[in-house]
Length: 411
Image (tube, rainbow, N blue to C red; front, top):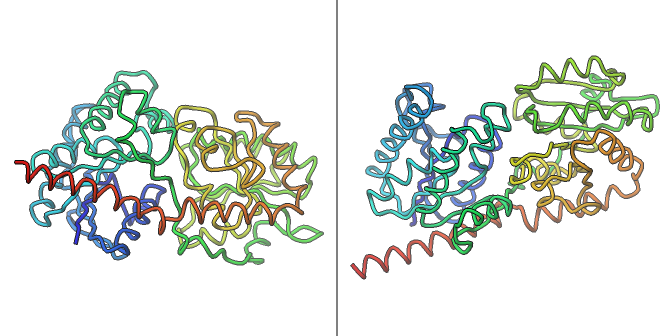
């Protein structure tokens, strides 16, 4: 049985889009008969436990804490991470090392893979330097930005196979001189066993949030996720007065938290539409579906940036699987997921009026809602179901195994 060691930044029990994609990949590979394990870096390992099991998956943890000033600290982190990977390789003897971005995972995995003659798959979910700009911890064009980009190119050029989650990332790598036939695309997906059966609307929860009007349930626009600036939630809040003017009973539900939460709450309080906006903060993962069930439209007003143009988010796919209408800004990452006026609607990014107009038009088009929902669900089932998409990994692994065996025979 083929053994795949996944090298990861973090994993369950942390809940994030990153860990949900990881879980889906590993569970799908298990169901295909592969043996899988994960090893995570030292950044998120706060205890002394070196092996943990979550949801039937085994995760090894890197020991130690990175030390030193920035950049030197990252090199120390890579060294600690490589030691952990070495330990698992010696104990478990995997057939393939499959590293997932950020690039610190790739660099640590590359060291070990070359030392042991193991094939390396490097999978990029986002460019770390662009993600740092997007969450406010980095600056585009800075020394660290350029160094991180150069290190990523180094790892990609030496990996045996490269995977990206979308065409935007693939095109960027090709622009750096990476041969296009070395890069596969494994699109973001949904585990339909988890997201495929929406919960019924909870009337009590709806009443507690003020989502019951004199004419029955209010139409609800929702966002569930992290409150980063690039998500454009300030644009969504600013769009609410214009939306209320056309749809007086419309409500906005914001579930989650993050760096922009305090500023967004203050903005909402000062809005003429303050009475129509509800923040509920972060909720336990097991309760998320209850809030999805309250929403008619999930809104994703991402701002234009390298990150949003190159990277496809996971949340719109989860919303489609939940049977929700999707309205999103017309940035590159959304265009790869949403067919305008078929599986959702796209509106001009960074434009408050365009956001309000699109939401109002969609609320007016209630007769078309079921058509949107069916098209969106079909889109997820055909192109973004992990049970189907994960099979493509086996093709990559088999190709690498054949290449490794051939090299061994030639030697």
